[in-house]
Structures are given as C-alpha cells and as structure tokens.
Image (tube, rainbow, N blue to C red; front, top):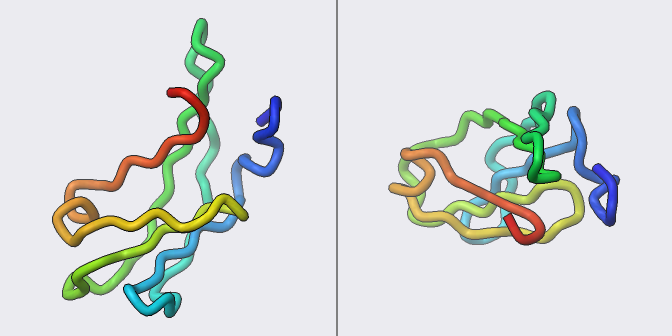
Length: 84
C-alpha cells in the first residue's frame, strides 16, 4: 500500500481475540487485488476460531482492533481502511 498504507500487504498479521483480549486465532492477509479506477485493494484472510464466543476482535497490523458479533463473523466480517 501507499499513501499511509505501507503496512498493509500480503503476509501482514491478522489477530482475532475474544472479548477479554486473549488471542484465539491468527492468520495473514492474502495477496491483494487492485480495483482499477478506485485506488483500492482488497485483501482476503482466513482465521479459524471457536464459534461459541459472543464478541470477536480483529486486529490487522497496528491498526487497532475492531469488534464483531458472532453472526457477523459467521457471515464474514468486512473491514476497511480509508474512505472505501
């Protein structure tokens, strides 16, 4: 990435935690897909976690932790940086 996103690239760590902050799974960003005309990239990732937790936190790189419910995790959480 560029323009303040140089820490976002294939292989960057993804950490999933429970509501008390304990790490329950780790993974990494997959190869990015550039979206022509938008300046945006999409990175997938997969992390296997227990499905009996009420709230999950996802941290990518040093960007802080975003919280997701069990139903959001089952449908695939959607995270974004910037204005996209």
